[in-house]
Image (tube, rainbow, N blue to C red; front, side, top):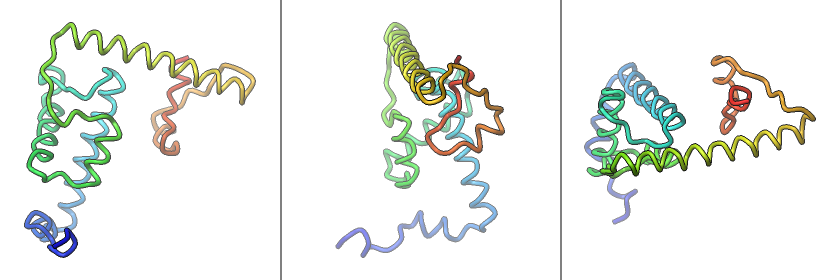
Length: 152
């Protein structure tokens, strides 16, 4: 019997019975935390959020890991988390390991920005990219972060 033949799971059936307004709120909350995690990763270079940094985000990350372990994480959410290299299994790491990872990430990010700046200069003939407001950044196409101007 294939996955398609099994019909909806109990979880899917229960979710369908929730009023649309509550579903939208649930989805928006998930997206909000997901975007917070993206911002955290851009700043820290990883998705391991400590309780001392942000209790709500830490709890949300733990919840995603638990949902993954229990096969309750939707395919769409799983794929989104994979795109940001989410650690589905928490990793106990020493402070030295974390510092080394941050340093490696910072060097990689720096090299990436240098390459972006070289490409920008090749296309535009100068090294003064636009600095976008947060509202303008929200309107950029997927995959364009708009951060080169901030970095320069």
